[in-house]
Amino acid sequence: MVAKDTMALAKASYDRCCQAPEFLQTFYKNFLAACPEAVPRFANTDFKTQTKLLRHAIGLLLIFPNQPNKEPNLLSRLAERHSRRDLDIEPGFYGPFVSSLLATVKQFDGMYSPTVEAAWRETIAPGVDYMTSKH
Ligand code: HEM
Image 1 (cartoon, protein in one colour):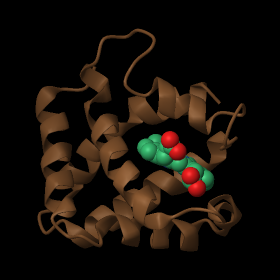
Image 2 (cartoon, protein in one colour; image 1 turned 90 degrees about the vertical axis):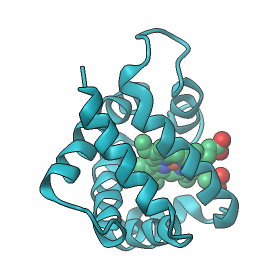
Image 3 (tube, helix red, strand yellow; image 1 turned 60 degrees about the horizontal axis):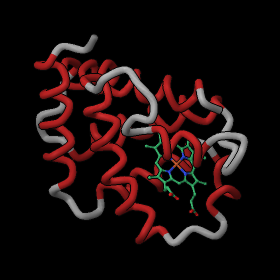
């Protein structure tokens, strides 16, 4: 269970970040700099489309904890896409993905604080755990 207030703190932070059009491009820049092993995975990626898809998917990650625990769920299709049956994103990539996301939130959210960071971590953990469990 993630408390409603905690989820709301993370969502409000995300909304503030999304006001900057370059937020998600900066996230990818940060992620690929922190995790050069991921660079070849994005060799054929159109980042304009990709950032739009990611904008929506982070929104899903942030509401995942209050969804019924059943299949299929909000993240089923995305988890299948990242699984060994498709993109084959190994679970080890998710740690750098999350730290780069939080580093980027810190850059863009003027109200960032340890409480906001903790809210992000707690809120996205169930979705990230779900995706890695489906690898
Ligand atoms: C919870 C974390 C993640 C979320 C929410 C997420 C979200 C997305 C979304 C929405 C797409 C587009 C889906 C589609 O093609 O239908 C995508 C594609 C992709 N993701 Fe992720 N992703 C996550 C983690 C990762 C990680 C850790 C990697 C590591 C390298 C990664 C690599 C990719 C790649 C290579 C693609 C395909 C890009 C392309 O079409 O060229 N993702 N991701």
